[in-house]
Image (cartoon, rainbow, N blue to C red; front, side):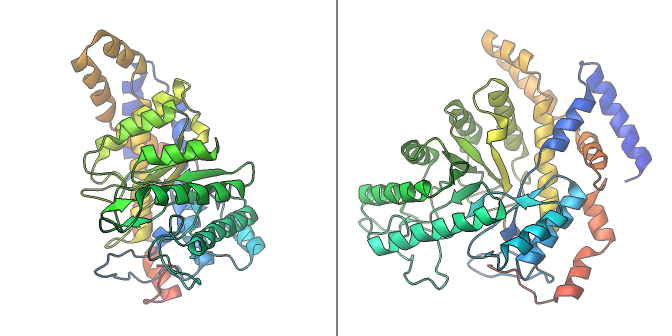
Length: 413
């Protein structure tokens, strides 16, 4: 894309928005300030239970993962932090890792614990972790989370994300109430072990890997537990953790209304927890979610700065870095479009029962081509005008393969 084309595109949208009294310089500043953490586990080729296809040049250790995130940050200027997964990303030297991250201009977002698979620990999580009928297994899972907190403290993280695969596949396999009670008790121990300036981000998921019942299947159960833990425990919304056609934007609004929204794991889905590229399937839903986020923040329901933003995706057939570039762009565009919503007019239409008018307000913002604004925000921040084109032109994947090897596999996957 030529500089001349970009300037013409920017001038065009500036003219369009100026007629509505909108200052694009403020919009560009808001877009520039919005940063989304990248996940360490999304830097290698993902897979399904049927297979995994390596792409080569994958990061073989935590240091190489940081290098990939640093590259992503440099190109896009949309991410300034990495979210680590333990035990996949245990630092051997926390001070050295901190120095490495600082040199790349990135920090550490929420830490992610893992009690959904066995990785050599003494007791198996086959029948659950924090909800396990065996108190020894529960104690082991609690201790793992406390270790994750300690690792996070050494890296400057301020949050712990907990997702549980706990549940059952068959009727009668688990005692619903006891499983929930054991989970609450275990989480209380973990919560008590967090520093006072940390928050606990509690996920939910209706199914998978268990298909009959999941201990924390929905936002309501997650919120119920968080209420019992304390005001630093909030609900994490993973966009893929919902049944088809769930009104996620309503869930977001409800959680904000109670000051219970911890943050997001951004991805997209067609049927279930597909972990597809953000905005690739339901871009309008992503836009509507941001409409509720901006509205809730501006109305004083919950502070914008209290919400965490992270990507959570699995790349089965894509170059992971290319996918993350696409995801960051899609999220930025949805955010930018939501900023354009005429909230005063929307409120008027809602109060007057003008259904058509309200829809037109949203559609006008959604159909606005904001790519020039997002691009300009990136350029002004020192990033590439077209990160994806730059990545391909410089043959960065080929360089990574030459450096790390064709059969290099990301640690933890």
